[in-house]
Image 1: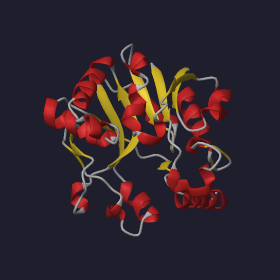
Image 2 (image 1 turned 120 degrees about the horizontal axis):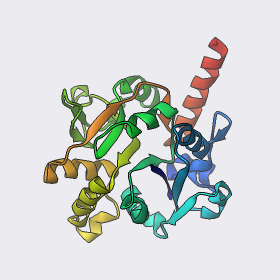
Image 3 (image 1 turned 135 degrees about the vertical axis):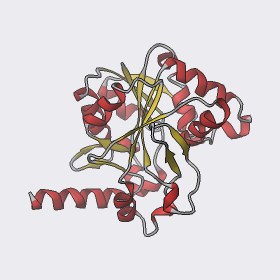
Amino acid sequence: MKAIILAAGRGRRMQHLTDERPKCLVKLRGKPLIEWQLESLSAAGISDIGIVTGYRKELLSCYNLTEFHNDRWSDTNMVVSLECADKWLRMEPSIISYSDIFYDPSAVTSLINCPAPLAITYDPNWRSIWENRFEDPLSDAETFLIDSSNQVQEIGNKPDTVDEVQGQYMGLLRITPESWNYISRVLAKFPENERDEVSMTRILQAVIEQLKFPIIGVPYKNDWGEIDSESDLQKFNAKYFLLKNEG
């Protein structure tokens, strides 16, 4: 099992915090975000870890990871970054992690143990996090519907009500060579002018709609978060401070 961290972007919503460093080097609770991911992946038994770089890639060389570089990082989205690791994705199953999230090792092991060719972790208790991050939690949430067999029915659309959001995708997934082939087929159907901006959830929704390929959702209820802005960083750090003092 390999792992690939998608760390090409700058993270413009982080404002001055990414003026001189990629988003994954912003510190949360005293250590860079990427170290949260590396520690959880390693604790779950994954030692073969790659990284897709872009902005200020030289600052990530100290981690001695297998590098895939997206030289168009400023003009493309995360799916194009993922394509840069095509060689690995065609070799064996891989855990894919966004570089602006933190989670504990159990999130990774749950994906490793899932037998499905394409699986994602999701938070069924998403509202408490989103209500803390946003005045209106639906302003940033995406639709997520899942059936009784844990098969995702819808993901990534704009919800009108909370009933359309049974959880939130975390930015952590497991892709096998079989499912990567399906993802690549769907991506190839997008017009060239759209491919650079297509989001991961839009691709996953297209896999469901166009190919009827099953995506399994794995619930995760432990500590995690997405650092998408300076406000997120402040709130997750404050939560940690409160927890330490309560303990």
